[in-house]
Length: 218
Image 1 (cartoon, helix red, strand yellow):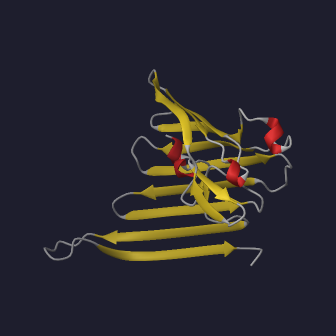
Image 2 (cartoon, one colour):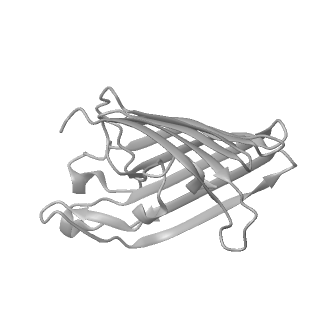
């Protein structure tokens, strides 16, 4: 449930971020011990799904790393026949630390709040997604958002889809996965399929692909 938010390359939560810390003196990622954690997920009735995860990572005084808490909460509500709308909160911040060890500098945090709408028509011809996510930090910069959409129509003869992705320059999901920020992308594909009466060729077709990509800070 947590992994379905966002899109490929734009995920507000990526579980492999937990248990990994960065040694700022070397720039290398290192293993970060976990004290304990718990996860709860399931359905409430026919229309609701919920998920909750909480993990506490150990401090590492050798690199000045306090004990970090990771919390993820998600809820999904079924709408119409097969679609759903979902919300997620991802929170990463120091907890249960001795203030004197870190000169009182334990108020840093990183949070992402997001909402996704997943479309699936009753006849499965229309499928799609829209999402909007926003990251929050102590010194909140502007352009801290990521949004995108996908709309697809598919029948045996036609396969048509349009995809758009827009990521702000300061969108920063520390417990997620982001391939790159400050990018705008639109793509449209159209396929027309032929199904010949042949024992050799099962299907062939024609395709049209249009793409626009903008990366301001190159």
